[in-house]
Length: 112
Length: 114
Picture 1 (cartoon, helix red, strand yellow):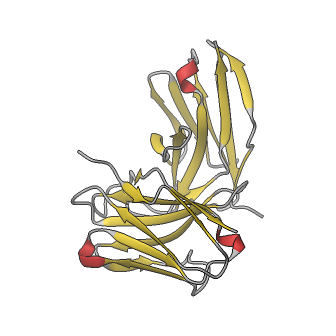
Picture 2 (cartoon, chains in turn orange, blue):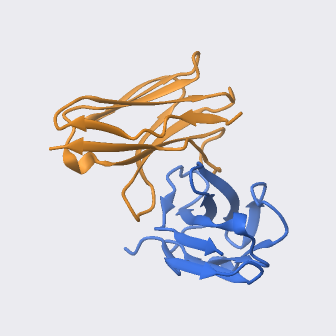
Picture 3 (spheres, chains in turn purple, blue):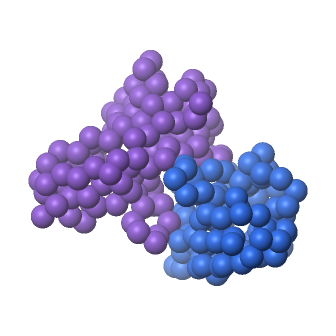
C-alpha cells in the first residue's frame, strides 16, 4: 500500500470554478503537509505548507489538513487557465530538512 | 539568484551503459536531495546530503546507484550499469539549512534506458 494516495486525474474544469484536490495517507507520523505545483517540463515548486491539522489560506488557495481522517485538501478559488498544472501533495514526519513523501499528483486543466 | 540546475536535461542510453547526472544546487544551500519519478508513479526520495555528507540514503534502490557531493557543492548521481527500470525523471532539490522546510527543485533529468 502506498503511503500517500492521490487521484492522478486528469481533472478539467471551466475558468472561475472552485477546484478541490485531495490526498489520503496511511502513516500517522506525518506532521507536515505540503502542496507543490508542477508545470510541464519544470520541477515542482512549493505552493502551500501546513503543520498538523487545520486550515491555511493564501490568496485564492486554501489548504486543509484533517489528521484524524488522514486527509488533506487543496482548494483553488476563482480558478484561472494559468493554474493548469500538476498538483502534488507531499508530507514529512519532521520539520526542516527531511525527505518528502509525495502523492502521484493530479493533472489539472482550467478551460477558458 | 540562479535556481537549481541539472544536466543533462535528457539522456538516452542503452542497457548496461553508465550515465552520470549532475545537479548544481542554489549557492549556499547545505541540503541537497535526489528524487526520482518513474513513469506513472509518484516522485520518490533517493537520498539527502548535508554539505558533503550523506544524511539519509534510505531511498537508493541498489548498489548500481552512486551519489557524491564534491566539497559540499554540486552533486553527481551515477548509474552503472543502467537497467530498463531505471528510466524516469531524476529531480534534484536543495534547501538552505536544517530548519528550512522548503525544497527548491530543479527541472529534472529525463533518463531513458533502451
